[in-house]
Image (cartoon, rainbow, N blue to C red; front, side):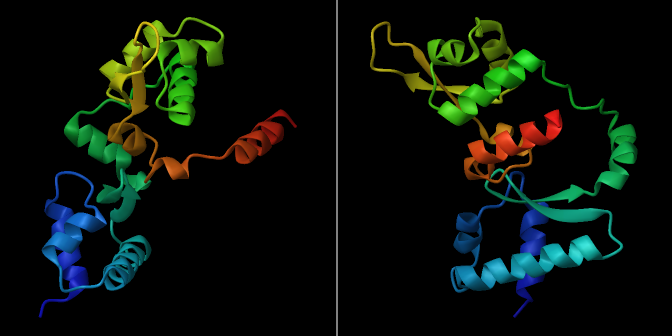
Length: 178
């Protein structure tokens, strides 16, 4: 039988979106989750330590191949990609409010930030970093906002559990002010 690492490499290479453990299990039902996880870890280590320009990263709830940072300028030049558009401080604050308090309404975000966040929410919707996930069962039935898979990928997160906790953020801010 073909080596599991080679199979995983082929599956990740051909996958259009991050390849999740559930999808891998659909293709390889005879393999245990532990065996797959061990093979993914070994494969990632091989890519990271070898003389390759590619690495295997976990993001958006699954695995993808990504170029190593050293090769970013060349890839961008080939693909004629400008640097990723930076978000304004207002958009970042708004995105943080949604990420940490989701599902959040516009009034929730405005209460957290202390300013009108309508424009920032529209920017985040246009960039597909947040989405409308329904309506709150409250007077006026305000829209509920959640982060998207693109949000996870944009910040290199595997899941919302990877967001820094309040204690970590406080420590980072204290170190920055020192």
